[in-house]
Image (cartoon, rainbow, N blue to C red):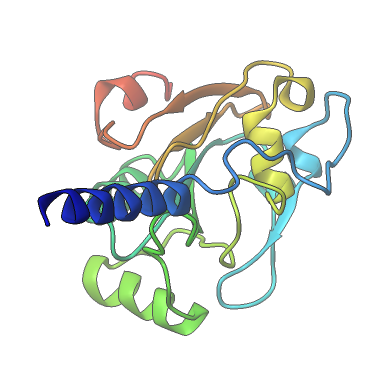
Length: 192
């Protein structure tokens, strides 16, 4: 009997690992190109409609964050909003809801918007729900994760609340893992 339970546990753990990391090694089918391009050429649908055009943020830093409502890092919405307010003259935070990590962003656009506003007072722009990795990776995340597109660095989105900092001239500056607090010196020291 103990062997049977151990085998069941191994199958469950393996299944969860496959689910969590599905698509991690797949290249997107809709590559936006193979040559360096400007961040300002990109756009994404907004959470509550319309389109977010990156060109609208020329002259400001942009912090791109893949977000989720049911994650251990979800409380980072609060410091993200504080960061957005504290540096509003020189920084824009953009949230990108994603349901690819243990289905931690299952809600509709209305659910996500209501949750963020009700629980954290989020006022920064939020995109429609999208994929940040795998074969359906959104073009914004293709640019953020591929040096051949951004001209600066490769990165892998490992979990919810990974952060990417873009310069006021549209250059890829840095990638920060989920554990990096939005108000940490790692991020704020780069915003000049």
